[in-house]
Length: 153
Image (tube, rainbow, N blue to C red; front, side):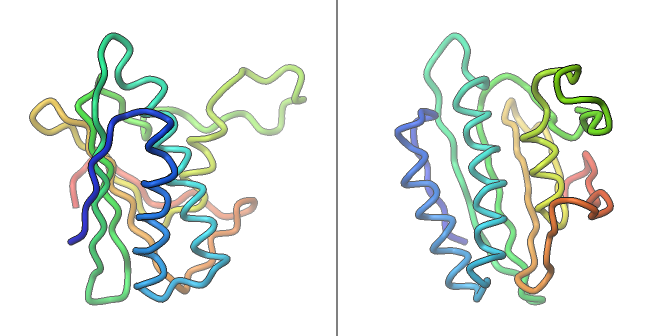
């Protein structure tokens, strides 16, 4: 398992993304699939940077590990305020854009690009687990919702 820990600031985004990109390359993910996954990871990280630590500085750790069936498991852990992104409902996309509630699209994109998502709160830590396959295309529109649960892997 590879891991990287950085301050929970936007300055850490580039090193984290380079780390995740390297993990995807080493596991043989196509550039297109890697881009989808990177976008989802970036969205998750930016949400942590912006909202997890409202009153104090904090850190984020990203871990990557491969599985025997060629999947990659990406865990994002922080000690910020509890937040289960799986509890957020999908946005109402059929409503005219000017009448939609602001927010929620980033979480929707994460759900559409990732094969399997899990969240758990463990010892005052948020742990978001993203499971991705190299060959599975994750078309962003029209894909039925990914499997996700609040249960650990």
